[in-house]
Amino acid sequence: QVRLVESGGGLVQAGESLRLSCSASGSIVRISTMNWYRQAPGKQRELVAVITYGGSTNYADSVKGRFTISRDNAKNTVFLQMNSLQPEDTAVYYCNAVSFVSLVPYDYWGQGTQVTVSS
Image 1 (cartoon, rainbow, N blue to C red):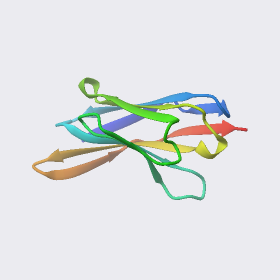
Image 2: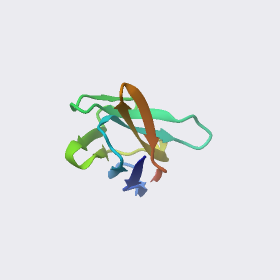
Image 3: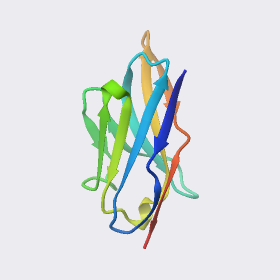
Image 4: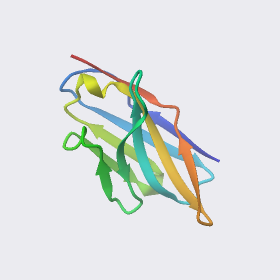
């Protein structure tokens, strides 16, 4: 079993920055991709950023140029640096990790951390 714990959320004003962290612990074989999702009130959960084990990244169009995802494979930790935050970035942010055991994918989720951006 893998446990993900997010931290770093909070309340900021528009234009400010936050850095989210997510650490994985437990029976980790090797985590493949680590991702950040978010869910705003009344909306579906959306993928924000993806990073592969090798460091390749991809972003939702809405955050490109403002958010940066990174990871420390040795510590099984993923980060999301969020700059120039806007009220529309307000959401619960979830960490997601995918690992493979004998080619079978296993999907893990954190509990989420609230990010609130005031105008």
